[in-house]
Length: 260
Image 1 (cartoon, rainbow, N blue to C red):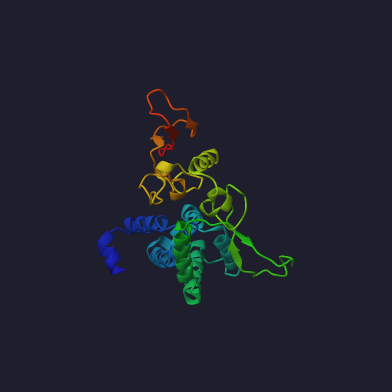
Image 2: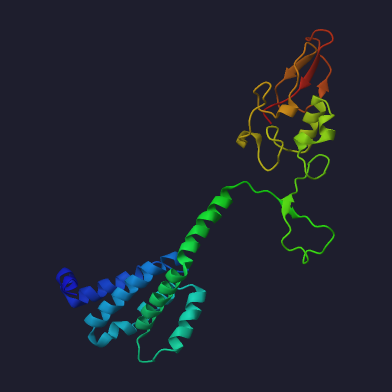
């Protein structure tokens, strides 16, 4: 206390500083893991106010009490109401709050809840960064209640044949098509030509380039270049067109835009 008196001098200045410290406490309804910091700082500030304020008058200030209550989560507020009902009515509200959060902090540290909460937050962030995969519960004819812990397996649905457990590049029907037909199917499905999946445009896709030619399309969409095929790189429809007068005999022009 002598240190505080030396630092702030006038008791009124000290009281205002202590009240400001209470107002600056973190919100528990935003980050409950800060309850230890909250409890220790509130307890120190309330103890100092009790010593420096006249007859503890500052401990009954409605604005300070409401400010602290506003930092509680709904569940913590309900817990405090039950705790307060068990305490003497002569005890100031701020003192009750200080003792309550100190008790809550001690209980959570002893139970390991704060560490578990922090670890869970890190785990949740890591899981949110992973690609999302749809899963389905596999059963053997029994109801879901009878097999609540059945192992889940991937349920990948082909966008072309609608069958499960394989993707478009592994679709038997798709692989029977020639290159021009595969391009047309991919375009009609409105999927990315690079990874053969929907939900994004090709320009934002980070999938590997074609292993055969290094261009921006999947390997299953690759065209084998031969003397009878001419590639036109533009954004028109994918189709075989009749040769123009400027093309040599027996040469087809096949539109295979890589930029879509």
